[in-house]
Image (cartoon, rainbow, N blue to C red; front, side):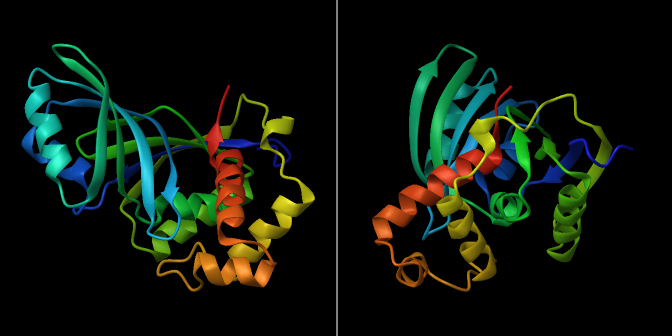
Amino acid sequence: MDSSKPSLARIKIKFPEQLWISEIFKNFPDVKMEISHFLPYDLEKSIGNCLIEIMHYNIDSIIEQVSVHPSVFELSVLEQEENQVKFNVKTKDPYLLYAIIKCGVLVDFPVRVEDGFAYWRLISSRDRIDQLLTLFEEKNINFELLRIGIAPYNIDDEKYKLTLDELNVLDKAVSSGFFEIPRKISLEELANELGKSKSALSVMLRKIIKKKVLFEK
């Protein structure tokens, strides 16, 4: 394989039992689900913001169960038809997304979910993908590498590149353990070390994470 070209890895990852997605697939095993995007919402509390699409004949019961699940902080229905719904949900974010950010790997959305497993398409250099998979093993994340090869996409676009200030912030966040589980430094402590306000750093980290995670063809 040409190591100078980006790699595309297809992996299958099991959602932790404590998350609402696992519960939904237990109660509605024939549900069809897709994650349109997933980004951090509250960096301090590790809350992620997801856009979800679900197809099922019992949409109302699913929405009710998701909305009252302990891992869910807020749910907003955006579009709903008889057998289909699109909603925005703010939920506890396990270390999966933070591991992807730490290793510098892009996620090709949307992500298909079946039987409680998410089928991710990850794009980066082969070394970074290998680093991520090693981290998954160390954290005992239930995953399976389905396939890896050369990516048919260009990831050298300007929209994925960080400014010098953003690079410095990301390097400091990674080296200080901000993306570790459990976190080794708080957002406020990191902001103080970088000489930035807490709110300004939060905004910058959101921009950095979007560039580092959300792949758009």
